[in-house]
Length: 119
Image (cartoon, rainbow, N blue to C red; front, side, top):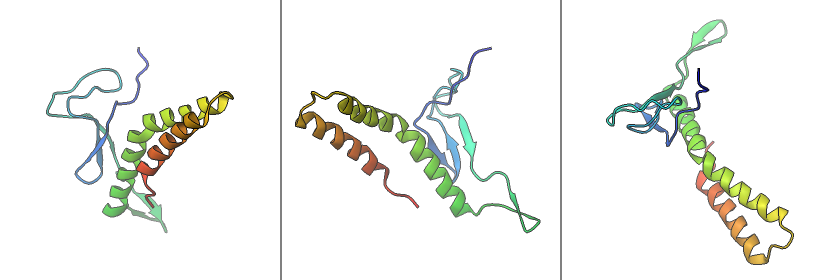
């Protein structure tokens, strides 16, 4: 048995709150789907919760907002890691000059600003 990994991105939202990998993309275990289809990664809000002893489902607006947030975080992961590595590499290099410092900080800010502040 092989160790499965997550489904590669970029991930997208279909039908409001269903999350899919890219068309023709591979699954976490390397199986590619047809070019006109993508692997479904998640369905947000599929399961209800008890509220006052009654089962309630999340509203469609909340499900869609949750799906958007999941996709945004997953798709930004690699870029965030790269930007933060750049900042750490600079901080670890005491011989870095002001231009290198400005470049690493600018890249970190570019990535963070691109994420926005979704509440």
